Image: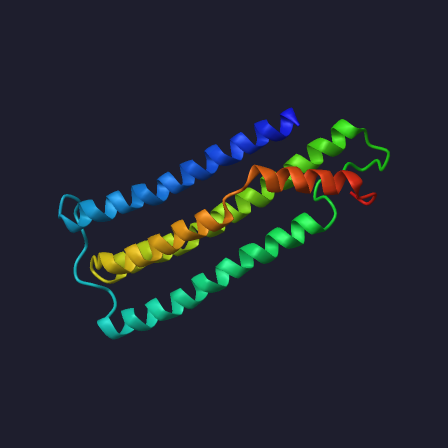
Length: 168
């Protein structure tokens, strides 16, 4: 269980760093809005195109929310991703494979949680600095992080279930 705590701490630190990246992007947007950072002009897309693009990207971002859930269920309910070749692997090898699976799933989830913020940043550039679009997608991204941030109790339960599962 000590290894589980270490892996969980790493996952939390990585998650906080990536959320910090979202906030850093917000800082950049604020600098660009206040004209402290040079910004290209004019907007590459029209207002009508921007609105249509926003709606499309909102739908895609909503789909990403469910893709994260599906990927987590798929990889955590199935067999281990990094199962040692030898089925007679030691308990330590199995434990390492389980932790690696958890960490890979968390990293995948984190990266997908950032997708809405990236959409918002792209829209910010395409619409000549309309910060509202960025902030809508940034909040969506932070909500994804809050929803999918790993809980230690969930990790403990999953590790116990995989221990009892003969196929794990």
